[in-house]
Image (cartoon, rainbow, N blue to C red):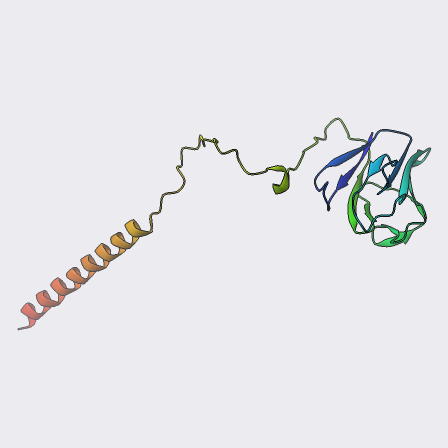
Length: 161
């Protein structure tokens, strides 16, 4: 089964299954895939499964349908094709191979931040600021170097005099 991966808009990161022989896309509620965006027409485009693979057709939309940067009326879809409906962008993914993995990317709007009660199991504790410690160590090293130079200078003065 093929998919559309939404790259922009409210569905960003979501894979939309093309689970029927023909799928309609648009802003109107009677579409198979409703895209709630002002730039998308009520009945914007359709995707269907043909003998040679999937095809895409524009349904006389106002802002057009583009595939890989070119405005189309109808075309075949190749893996990785970038589809733009109005200002919404999708990527066509053919049927997944047995080796591929579906990864769902959560956006910040969907709560990608860790839960409030999240506890890290990392052995490296976060939040510690070592800048003061490093500053003190550098000052001590500089003082030790200065004392060493002073001792060397005094020693050399004693030998020469």
